[in-house]
Length: 133
Image 1 (cartoon, one colour):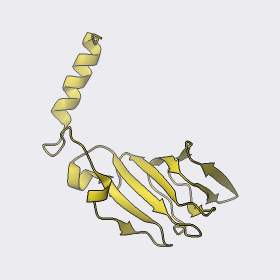
Image 2 (image 1 turned 90 degrees about the horizontal axis):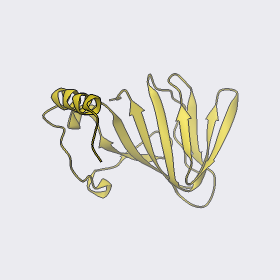
Image 3 (image 1 turned 120 degrees about the vertical axis):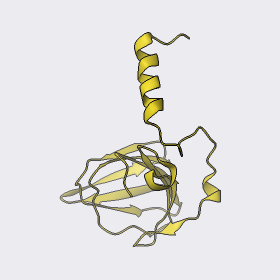
Image 4 (image 1 turned 60 degrees about the horizontal axis):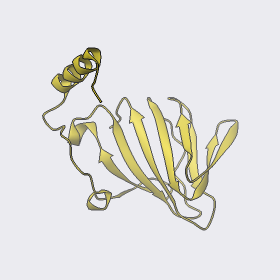
C-alpha cells in the first residue's frame, strides 16, 4: 500500500528526530532485569528514554496474588494493557476492576494503587507518554 506524501514527510521528520539509540529491534522482556515496586509488584523497563532514547516509556509489570503497588500518581498519562489475570485499581473516590484483554487509562495526576485480586498472577504492559524516568 502506498503512503501519501504527507505521511512520508511526517515519517521523514520523525526519523530525523530519532535518537541514535533508537532502532528497530526485537525486545525480549525475560532478558531485562526486573525491579520490585513498593508493595510487592515487579516490573521490567522494556523501553526507556534514558536507555533507549525513545519518546515513550514501556514497562511490563507482574503482580502476584494478594500483592499490589503502593499509592502513587504520574505526571503523564498511562495506558495499561492487561495480558492475564484480574485486579483492581483503587482510586481516590472509587475503583476500577479489570481483567485480561482490557485496557485501563489512567490520566496524569490520578492517585492509584493496583492489586491482584485472584489466584492468577496479573501480567500487564504499561505505556507512558510522554516518557517517565
